[in-house]
Length: 489
Image 1 (cartoon, rainbow, N blue to C red):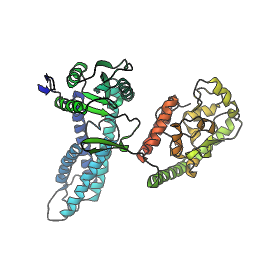
Image 2: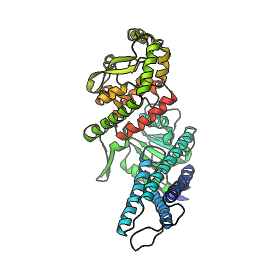
Image 3: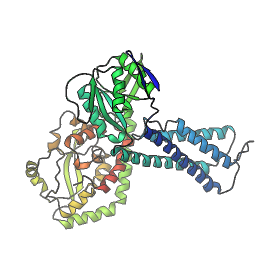
Image 4: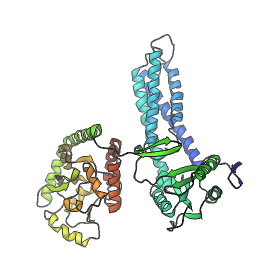
């Protein structure tokens, strides 16, 4: 039993050493990491030396590669442990977990190079060049598979942190909605304590009280079974209360989260700086200029050139098939609005009748869908072949020419026609701050099945949180979305 002291009374509760699923996940991760490291090091030894027990050349130190391999396995496993690769804060979401695995491994082999230099050991480069990339690749692949399994289990209500929310009703509703929308992150709101009256709270969150004090929070944890407390941004709480609450939760080993009133902000943009005992949060906006712009453009030129060369023959065949399928040109040109509001001619394989544009307004009037991002299921203007090439996004391939000439990028918000851009509100105009793309964040997050608001929100998230790593992830996910055909029409 652990004794907790509050300003009004002493409470005895059972000590919570952590969620059972979290401990099981950590143990499983340690075992699999060890297996990956052993396979990588043993594989490097066998590929370089076979079954011979060779001695490291150079210096006065006698060290066999068999001994070095054992030391490397033990050290690598320890580095992964102390490098924070299994920290609960990075487990199951984001890229930080993968980054820590790669950085910890690179530090280890950097240290190996330094030791080899100091003691004049001529460590075989073939041994190191196999062990490092093979080990990192295996660990990352296994971690990815573990994360997928964890996400699937969370979708069924397992392996979740149960969260007690504290804040005003509107803040509680907002945070609860966001956490439930992304349940794979592992946080499930189960109850709430309100700091003020106002709007009703969501039906799936029990309200256990209002005007909370430390005693009420502790009682609510026991009643709801929560293992995490989230204080919503904007909650009118005394700093002394938060400090005492932190002590009480720490003694019980219950997690405490401060959720600021910030939305759609990625991790790299947030920096915490302690000033006079206050945790000040700095929020930066990434600017796509300088070397970042050069790197993105270089990626566009290299990939679009390679793809155009590889797909030249298939694209020629598709063009002939489009021409034979229905009257009209094989290619369709349309004026779209790009970066900074500049217009350009976007190229596609024609997938509709040649008079499709003249019929557009009539179909928009009949449809209940938004004019912005207008799409129709079973659009009668689409040709027989057009339905097939749209399903697999083959009609977009000629836009690789747009990417190569700089009017588009591989990744970015989809370009729209002038009449749609004219309907933009103040926030939506920010889509025009970056180059439009062949694919984007909303295309790999649901494609045409998303609502207008969600599509624009994802585009704005991309603009506000751009990174080259995110572009590479979107390109990878694009292939998966195209093959899956979900939301394509």
